[in-house]
Length: 306
Image 1: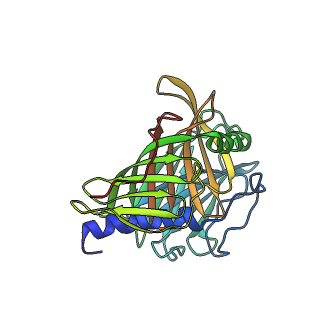
Image 2: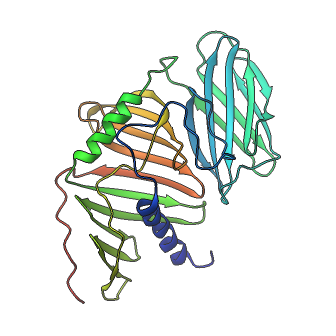
Image 3: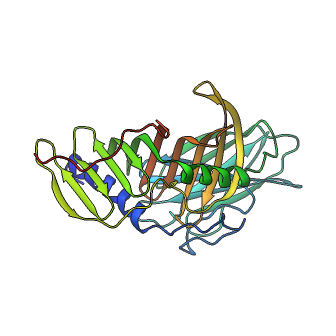
């Protein structure tokens, strides 16, 4: 994209399209093993703990699975076109053991590390189209606690909210980043303001948009079901840390959503299971949201003209 403002608007548009057209969740979470929308997508190993990050324009994820022979590790690398990135050289290391990754599909690289004892760190080196060295700290409790019920509870906590606000950083690459502020109100209201950019208000089947210095313009809108979490389903959910967030006990949980598909890391309030912080990594979509003002966000109303 040539214009930075254009990339900002596109990033927000992609998020709104995702909210409108993503699969609707069922009454429960997906089964522990669930196929993605694309059979070619480099999904994580079943039962593995997952970690994710952006790596330039690419999405990078690591899956770690404890087996009797040691650690089975897998790197998943997805390009901005949504396809796995082939032809890369990968290497893994943990507790003195190292191994080169073998291709297990497009964008999928796997190895067995014959380690003994509790692993503390896995190191991943990627060379080829991208050059990355990633040192990943593993949970202090190993194997980590299953978090499937926590994510189910977090989903219910989202659905029970009347309002909330959040601050968002959304990027499609290191050069194209948008920051914005959002308000959400049940059952179908949403408003956002892009820093030094456009604003919008959505109420049911209508929306109003305004460019900086402009006037509000009305148009039809596909109704949004709000508040709702960013994920649709969850597999590979594990507690990767116990922590304190905003002076309250919390869990950091990572998981994979095969229906989006995307990798998530969330911070959950241990008492309420409200999501305090969320990071999502997927195709050209690297998102960080920080939540607050639960049931205390000002009401969203139709904007005045002018």
